[in-house]
Image (cartoon, rainbow, N blue to C red):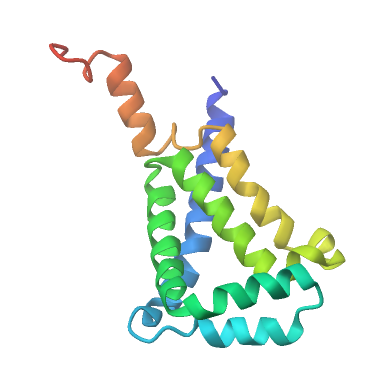
Length: 159
């Protein structure tokens, strides 16, 4: 079990990650009715220098409308789960996969700037920290449920 001050810091990090997902998700809400991911994928295709990224983008392009809606649902859904600290481990894993996918598709992950930039690598590694640190245990629904179960309130015939 982590010390309470560290749990508090992890809760703040979880909330910051949630807001970092919710903000872009809210800006993309129009993608539900009018998906615009295909234009972004086309732009990345013209800038792709890595053959693996190019192949990946060409595979994804025909599915851009569906993927646009998944992006919105992912950013809003995972952001909400992280904000409330509910299903935090699942949200952290899916958030990691979503951000890694975006960084790979954009080609950013394969540049030196990714290692030295201000948000790429740091943002990607927030999610494993949230997962391993059990970031939903303080100021989150996960912690409330865990404490309730530990006190016997979650067992059949319990309090």
